[in-house]
Amino acid sequence: MTAREDILGVFHLLVPVDTGKSRQGGEGERTDGSGTDREKVGADPGATLVGKRRLAALAADILALLLVNLRLRKQIEDLSVRDALTGCFNRRYLEETLGRELKSAQRTGRQIAVILMDIDHFWQFTEVYGHGASGMVLRDLGSFLRENIREVDIPCRPGADEFALLLPDTSLAACRRRAEHLHAMIRDLSLQDGHAHMRRITISMGIAACPEQGETGCDLMEAAKAALKNAKQTGRDRIGVVEG
Image (tube, rainbow, N blue to C red; front, side):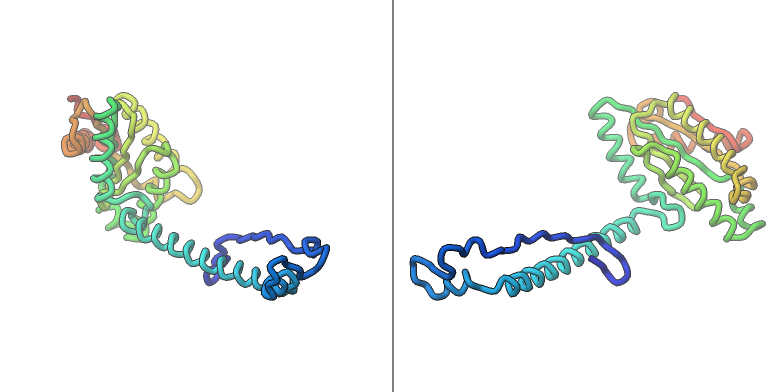
């Protein structure tokens, strides 16, 4: 099944072929004497197979259209909640998901943590190296986050040079360890081939967790922002936390 130049899948239909054994003992005979039934029993198997092939082709076309529609719906949904450059979720998705995760955590007694990240002096980097280089930094950072987190973690880009991670089932202490690990890995990323532009930037982080720093989405994000501000004011390129 194809749509334009895209291969959607393979539709395989197995149809049993009438070998004529069922007509043994008097081809075309029916007890009700119906001439129509005689014609059906004695029909050409080849003609029947052609009809089934046409029906199968029609079914395949309909399935292909359904698959295309599902793919387009998924693409539209992704465009509405994802940042095109980094592949991370946008601010609206962050706010909606944080509220939903907090309710779930409070109902089940679980914890949830947030890591806010900010690229230090990013506007200066853009002025010196241009928008092309800044776009590469944002893209690489977004890809790095998506590839180096758990499946349950949620990477977001709420601002131009800001990233956020929602970490379900994570305490403040565990969040700090995760932030330190990611911070070190981002430094290592800059040493890899093809990522030399990452050597010119540093990352500041702020962490917060529920219920230590708040039980609402607003309180939790404000605590993470305060921690990020503290990291910047104390020298940047570090992890900040505001104890509750």
